[in-house]
Image (cartoon, rainbow, N blue to C red; front, side):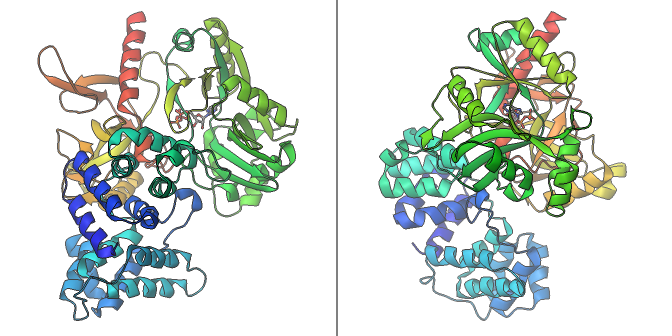
Length: 590
Ligand code: ATP
């Protein structure tokens, strides 16, 4: 397929206002493409060059893209900059300049998708001294060959500004429609995606080998599995009830999620967001080589700083200091980590994903030497609420966050928040004690004192997994420091869009809509019902439609934006609905 054709499709996608139509257009693209092109198309549509764990990035700042446009069109840099400021979008600026440029190309029959993608990869791979100029020239060479429409996407792609509005779930459904004739195979495709975290690979597999190959998908060493997540419940009784009377209960450690892949002396570590964090943890890599008895294994665990002197776990604020690019070795000595291993997904060549928890737990305790860094998470098995509560209290006394209860018979549920894992954190009494991770979908311009920052607050949403939509739950106007206001304004300006994004469901209108990309942590006193929001919206007896809203919401956390969560990993509408029910139960009890 020609890149100009894909650009036309993208233009169509950008003008669509319903998710269902987006699925149809995306499916059309796949049907129109050859099997080899599906993988690059998936990545380009996701706005990436490859899955995040491969860490391949363009390394092109805004100014560099501007220079490429100037170089390709013969238009002075200053004019490109002016056009960018005027239109507020580098893609539109490139398109408009290209239309006017003397050097514009009239035909669109040259650049194929493969050529386009390979050139983009080459830009990312160019590194070292002189790479800045080389990157600019490479992008300029693509732009010079491009039609104005192609130039638009060629400028947006390296700036992570494609913003087609499609989430991974939409792409999966489109693959199902294109290759299986309907949306029914989406779950199978999603399962394969959960096992390899590489949507391009899933697309290529179904395009080349069909659904039977997707059904046979297995975990692969060095391809991260999308991590299992926990639901929440407020009391020991409810947890045990949900677990059919018996539960394994583990300490909940508040540190870095580490998914460890080991093959001989080669070790890779992936974060909760599936980024490759191996470089950050040389001490854990060494410990995995020395303290794990088997050669080939995939383990799940949490790393956290621990003081040998006081025999205490250190708070997350300390552990987070290990997240750095420089001075890694020194910090590893100053702040040693322990890795608490709590699951195993591959043992030798045996896929452990479907084995019951209890069997996986046995396997993992057997393969750990009694070393000093790796240890199994502390665990009990209980049928008694009182025993569970005591274990919980013990965790809190030891400076931990709480507990995670686990269904002894459940398999490892990749990529999903299911009741096979249930977390219980400190007090659930009185005010809403747990925080919510919400997606920013809009922002307000400040009034009065705030106007000097050009920032007055956020409009935030939960993620509704079933609808694959973001539903508003709250306007947030407090908890911001001055620095955070400046930071938020700067960051959000770049993702501001004119119209409400397709996957956002809202009845109120912020001063500016923003593309759903960033997640913030919010604390509130209570969840209430309100007609202003769409989160979990339903009709009351009175006939009025209400959704969930937050009372006294405020931003928490040192850095405003949570870099470890994607919008689809935010608190879900279902979770809010559960929290609302639990809140009612607690207040009824009191
Ligand atoms: P939270 O903010 O509560 O940590 P989260 O959204 O980051 O929530 P959850 O799925 O809610 O993640 O909670 C599970 C997280 O707890 C895991 O991602 C993992 O990092 C951490 N964790 C700590 N100890 C354990 C344990 N023993 N078993 C499973 N997960 C654990």
